[in-house]
Length: 206
Image (tube, rainbow, N blue to C red; front, side, top):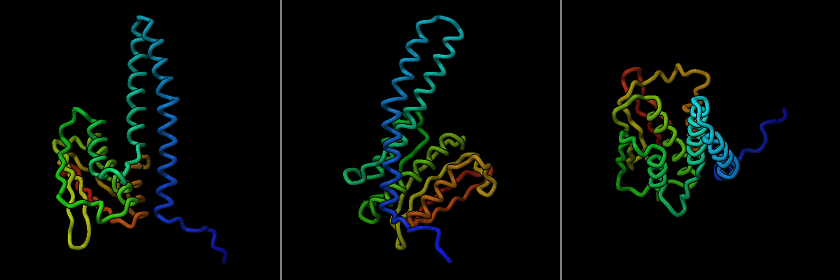
């Protein structure tokens, strides 16, 4: 029987391909989309009416969304900076007025125990977990922590929000599924413990 699955791509190559695509997308947003939105808003602002003020507000929201996507598309330079520092920088850039996210990093230098490719995947997973908590959990506290253990390295995102049923996700809720695929591809274990009105704990074990 013919094997139609094709050759397997190693994690390093796959990461390079995906991150290159993300970088290309970020360049297009920065060079093409945001300038067009800026010009459109400047043009609309010349007209003083309720309808044009509403259009201007929508364009401002679109520009903010485009900048957020640009920041999410950023690939952390794990060769010159710790992925944890990059993660905190991006989260604080995206949510400058949100004080719920608390950073409780351990003293271990995780770059000495996990590869650059895994650091990038870990960055993506934890960033998505924080974004979900900020947007959907209605939490008062979102705690990001890590710990070096005897059997590996563990990173967690814990919130005291509304929680959810991981087994009952709507079809259009891609965040959890994407995090699981990233963890599987990088040989990491993803665990989510959540219940409605009971908060959520997401852990990644490397």
